[in-house]
Structure formats: structure tokens, C-alpha cells
Image 1 (cartoon, rainbow, N blue to C red):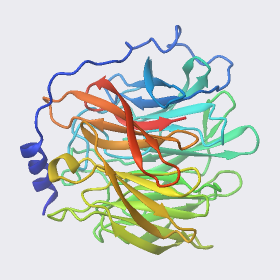
Image 2: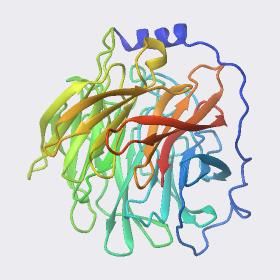
Image 3: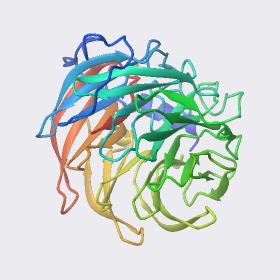
Length: 420
């Protein structure tokens, strides 16, 4: 089944949703001086959840997380850049259709910095995470076009290294794009979350006939993986070696074990998990796991069914469970969220449990202790101009999810999700 047919199918079967009340603060209410640069401060609990509006003037939407996992809107902070709210590839839908658009810093439990892409203005914004919210710290060019994904790792006691993936797709779908120069660019991140480009960190991805969707550091910070769906061979995964200074080297390419790899997540044992969406009818998505070799190649471990079009995945802090999300479940009658157990050797096993959300599930994030899963869901038709973040508690023994609440947002181009 061709990709265009899937779009038609979604548009034919998605039903209107009744008007709903938006329970969210107005722009600028996250802190009194949200337009200013960051002041000194440090991150404090209980917790936060962040997403971005992906609008022409882009904002980070801020939510305060309570001890029971429920969320309360805490306003919005401008990124200083522009999103791209219409016509995003590969399906021409409002949200960015990638993973990692909003990321908390990979500095253990500190999480002092937050990062967001501005796909419409080709920049990356950084924020200082404060006890009372976030404050804009810096904005830098991404050294490419249409930045869509971010990842970071710690270097030394006080410094972070951040990388951005530029997809460089100019059309509204992979079929009408006239560009083919997807790339990565690295930045050093200061203690105040300002960004400095890393010399020698810019690299093109290996397939220039692709639509790359995600970039991710392994947990040791020694490798960067980039997934490239819709290549002529059905998809591949680039792995960039990263030296002790945070400089990425030339990529090593491995073929994908499933068609159209989309989302990715590393566990602490060095296993990479990847969701694979397909254009088959009925949809026959899968999720795969890999082992990273000393020469930066990926060796497949297992590939298991993930009914529908799985696109996003996250792994609990204890490496026991993997959760995937996919937006087509409301149309094709399959769960939008699926759970898998992860063996010590990286083998994946479906748990048999699933959940749904109000709209189309598009991204997900775990609280820092993995007690709660948050799922971003967008209404994907013009007459459903709403988004929501649905909260679930996690049974740490079985991985089962239980809905505990929901917050509603205006607009259906909301992209990316990060949680603490």
C-alpha cells in the first residue's frame, strides 16, 4: 500500500471530536520575565513535562508534575524561533513526525538544561531549568535546514555535549522533497546552557535519499545513532563514533532489520531498540533490538510485531520495559501504546498490554523515576485543532499502564515531549 493511500485512509476514517476545554496557561505565564535570558538557578523536583507548539512563533509549553504523576499547565516560553506547523514530511501532517524535538539534558539527575528545535527557522534553542520553570538561555543556527531531533550526553563534571539532526527536507512529503543533504551538528553546552558549535562535528548522513527522523546518544556517550527510513533499501541506521572531546567521526551504516526505522532508544547495556513503521495493508509494524559492536556496527538481536505504524519508543530507567506509540491505532483498531519486556541480552518480548489516547499518539516520555509515562497526542485533521498529553502510571513489576489524567492543549501541530 502506498504512503499516499495511508494518508487518504486516515483522512477518511478519523472522526470529529466534540469541542473540549483547554486547561492550559497563556503564553508568557511560565515565569514573570520569560522573554529574558537565563538567570542563575538550579533544577528542583518534583518534576516537569515539556512540549513545543511548532507554530510560526514557536513556544515551549511547560507543565508542573505533581507527586501523583498528574500535570498542571504552567504556561509557555518563547523559543525565539519559528516552528513549521503545516505540511511536514513524510505524510504532510501538522506535527514534525520525528522524535526528540524537545530534550532535557543528558546529565544524569541534574537536568539543568532543556533544548528545542525550531524547524521553521533552522535554529536550536536552549533553556535553563529553574525551580520556578524555564528561562531562554541561547539560540544558535543548526548548520543545516529543518532541524528535527536532539540528543545530549555529559562530558566532564560541568559540561554537556548536544547534537542536532537536520533533515533538510523542503517538501511536504518524501515524494516531493527537492533536497537531500541531511546532517548532524554538535554543540558544547555551558553550565548556563549556552551553545558553542563543536569544530569538526558536522557530518552528512550516508543516505541522501532518506527522511531521517531521530538522533540519539548511547548511554556511554561514545556513539550517536541516526535512523533513516524510506531509503531505497527500506531504511538504515547510521552510527557515528564520538571521541572524548565530543567530536563525532564518520558514520558507519548498518541495514535496518525492519522496514522504515523511525524511533530509537538505547538501554544501559548498550542495546539499541528501533520502531519500524511499514506501508503494508494491513499495517505490519515491528520493533527491533540491536547490539553495538566494537567497530560501531549494529547486529540484530530480535524483531517482534508492533501492530500498526509504530514510530516512538522509550525505555524505563531499570531497562525492564520498552513502550512504543503509533498514531494510526484510532483508524485501524489497534492499541496506540504497546509494552515490551527487555531481556538482559536485548531480546524483546510483548507483554500483551496496550492503551489508547484521546487523539493520535505521536510521542512519549518517562518521568525520571519511570513511575509515569506521558504520551503526546494530536488531532491530525484541520477540524480537530487540539492536542493532549495523557498520563499513565506504570506497574514496575508487570509494565502495565493505568491512565491517571490528561491535559488539553490548543493546536494540533504540537511536537516533541520531555519529562522529569
